[in-house]
Length: 617
Image (cartoon, rainbow, N blue to C red; front, side, top):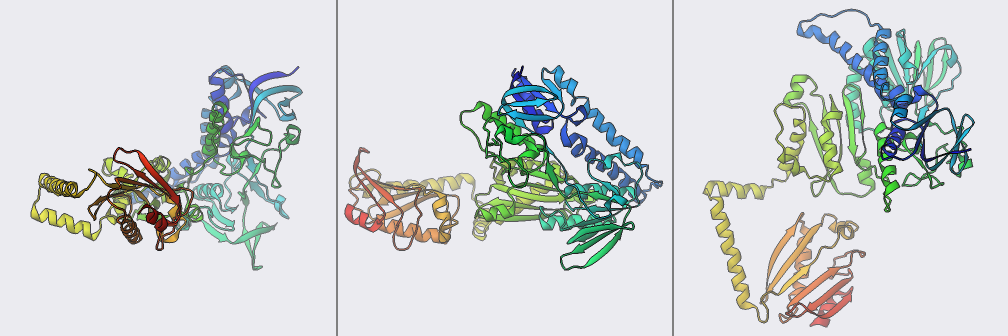
């Protein structure tokens, strides 16, 4: 007899635990499946984030100890790598106290250990017992890709899954693969005293090259060597043989290999086709933007969904899945606010939209770069080689950025928050940054942005105000007199109405973005007042450009031809059409003539602006 649940979660990693935890908390019947108790917590706890960061913490302390002689303390000795790994495993066990089968059973979940296999569209089997779920989430994660080379069996081979059981430190090690995992672990082992050589196509190829250059300089100072553009071909007589595309070969003496060449999805043995789940040619699961598989009652979460393979990406997936379970309006996966950190020393933190994405989308943006060289805290703490880059929209919104620095992952948190919430650069000025906190580097780049907006004309105006010692009250009074005078003059000259106003409502930005001459034209609104043949312009906009001046001039000239007995003219631009300005407006336009009481007199719709004006006249 089948046991029935509201939801079945296969895989107790970060994503699976988030889904199972919430559904259990609201009182639904939850079945959590993982292959064994020691697998609960997923790759992050067992082989990834937790042990690697514990190892990096140990390596940092060792490195600082070696450098302490500069401050009057001499430290010497050799590294007991077994002791270091005991520290790592101790931190894992501490976290396992609240990530194990009995813990989750005590919370009310049903936890089954064993390998799950689909037997139909809504049923899985574990150790001969069948379980039926209304919804099923596959969160089985991934594992390190293996490397098959002639002679590789003659040497010690490690991945991130077995490196933390190391009890004897190798004198020499080659890291195959120059991605985040390989570089993090390579730097840690280098700090322990191992001579580390990195072989790969390129160093951290997904990161900004400027940030990578800063990191590489530090890694080389630490003693690491790089052989980029090469691939391993054979292990022979204690040497790794490598070759590049030109056929050039090199031989690297080594005692061990650390393989870090990517990940493979854990989907084998699930019998996905039995559940109506399609796979792609790369061994992945076909899923849509809602994380639904081709069986709409089965979803994917975490690494197995493809894309960003991070713990926090799995958390994002889990949040989306939970939301869509209870919302009639389904939300698509959006990774525009995705962020990640490579936990080397210095760290590289990246968040939001990358520059290649901004270019691909055709977005207009400004690039701000900031060095740490003159930052007081960076000078004191000795990380003045740091650098950051920020991408800002024309309206001043934070779009994304990257940073290389000590604790870059922490320093960029407020920038990540700003990007995710559409904040503008000037919003940071509301915050008082205590001196000399490390986050004042963010204040520096904001001030750089604000200084760019201080034009020569505005500075001249401010100098004039200062030298004349005109108070704020006087300025307000002068402006009031000017506007009141203009208003009274206009009232005297109006023939039939107190307000002959022309509103040209916003032409949505996409229409102009598609037309190069007006790519930077993004008005919020225009308001024109027709006063007895004179046109007084009241303008509210976020940007201004020379092409906009010509546009305004043309529109004002054409509208000024309309007789003043027309009280109000309203012009609406159709958002689905492209605006092209030559000698006339060719965008589909609606002209509505209203009488003095605001009632519609007549409506004109067309794309020939001149003809419409002629018709009105």
